[in-house]
Image 1 (cartoon, rainbow, N blue to C red):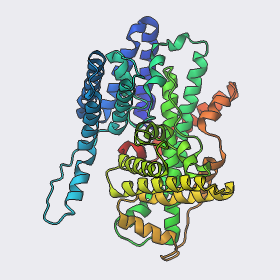
Image 2: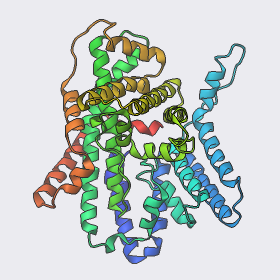
Image 3: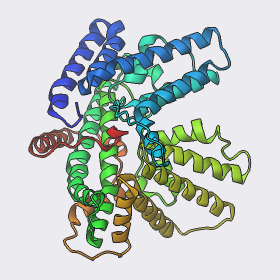
Image 4: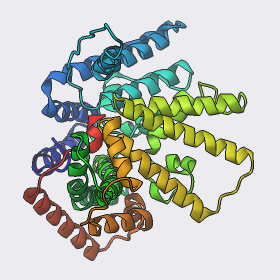
Length: 457
C-alpha cells in the first residue's frame, strides 16, 4: 500500500481518520490500540507473512526492557541489541556474505534468497535507540501498546524518519482533538501530504525515466555516452531527493492528521557548503542516529585526531552497508567517511574554502558518489564514470528540462515543512492545495506508479 496509491489515499487513510476521530471522542482509551491495529493492517498489506516478525520483535524487545527494569543485568541489553542486529543480518546480509565467501577459491556458500521484510532496517534501529537509552538510564519503561505504536506507527514504519522515543511517546497521551490548534494541525498535515505527493509524482518519478534506462544499460555492460552519463547522474541526484524527501513530507503530514509531530528529515541538503553540512541536512534522523549510537561510542572527537578520523570512516562505512547489502554501498559510505575525515583535517589546519567553492565541491562529490549508490556493480559504475569524465562517445539528446526544474526547486526553493508552516490560512490557499491534490490523483492514475527508493533498505 503505497502512499501514492489510490487504495491508500482514497480508502485506507480516510477510513483510518474516521475511525480515529470516532474512537478519540467516544472511547479515548482505545485510541492507541486502534492506531496499533491500523499500523499492522498497513504493514500486513505489503506481505502478511512478515506481520508475525514485526509483532514478535516488538514483544521480544518490550519483554527485554521490562525484564531489565526489574533485574538490570550487565549483558541483557547488549545481548538484545546483538539479537536485533543478527535478525537484520539474516534477512539483509546473509546472501551478501555468502557472495563474499564464494570469492574465495574452493568455497561454495549457498544463497538463501530470503525476502527482505519492508522496514526492517528502520524498526530495528528504533529498537536499538530505545534499548541503548534504557541501559544509559535515559529512558523510562512503557506499556506494550505504547511501545508497539512507537515501533509500528504506520507513517514511519517503512522508511522513517528515525524517531527517538523521547520525541513521540509523550505525544501519545495527548488528546489530538482537544487542542486549540487541532484544525490548523489537520489542515497543515493535509498540505504536507499534498506537497510530498507532488514532489514524488511531478518531480521524482519523471526523473526515473531519465535515470533507469541508463543505469540498466550500464548494468548490462553496454556503453554509455557522455550525455547519457550526465543525464542519469544529475537525474538520480534529484530523483532520490524528491523521492525520499517527498516520502518524509507525506509521513510527517499523515502523522499530523492523527495529531502527532514527527521530526524533520531534510533541510535543503543541496545547499550544503561542506560534506559535514550535507549530512546535517540529508536524512537528518539517520545522521543523528549514526552520530549518537555509533560515532560517539567509537570515540567521537574525544580521543585525539586519529581516533576521530577512524571513527568517522567506520561510522559512514557501516552507514553505507546499512543502506544496502553490496560492495558499492560499502564503498559509497567509505568515501563519505573519508570525505568527512578530510574535512576534519582541513578545519584543524584552518584551511578556509570560499562558500561558492565549498558548495561546488560538495555538490560534485555528492553527485559522483551517488553513482556508486545507484549502480548495481562496480563494473556498471565504471561505465558511468567513463561517460562522466569524457572517456566515452559524446552522444546527444541530453534531456535537461525536468532536471533543470528539479535542480532549481531543490537548491533555491523552501523546504516543504517551512513553506507549509509559514503560509497563512486562506480560503484561496485551501482551494489551491485541493486543486493540486486532484492533479496528483490524475497523475497517479495516468502514469506508472513507482515505489519509493528507500523501501528497498
